[in-house]
Length: 188
Image (cartoon, rainbow, N blue to C red; front, side, top):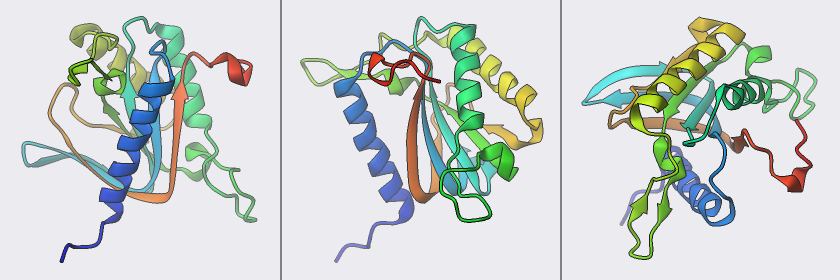
């Protein structure tokens, strides 16, 4: 008899399916965030917890090789403005992380630009290379801190193997990309 799936295992499977769909249907041409509303989340590296939050958002941050400061700014604005909670009157999708005064945990994840080759091996050629990505990721975190409360912005450990543990709230998962596709008219 197997144990029932936990909210964390469901959430991670859901993200894996979402990433597969993204890889199959979209071109890699923009900064990409996979955002989940959470009740709690943490990042552990080599058995040591390096960051944790209570209620808020977890953002998996993928940087494309051609991302610019404008991409970072766009994703910062969209992430902090995303209305993923009800208001006090019960109106759905009315409050964002800033209005609720909640935490945000960012996790660098170059694998958001992974594609499977014909041999079914991952290929990350569209992901930004390590040193430029480190600089861009830290610039993105700084933008978030300047645009919100710096004590509310948390992150994992860039370039490390991380265990990300989270409890989904909903689940609510969205994707933010800095290059809006023509199908949505490029609306902000």
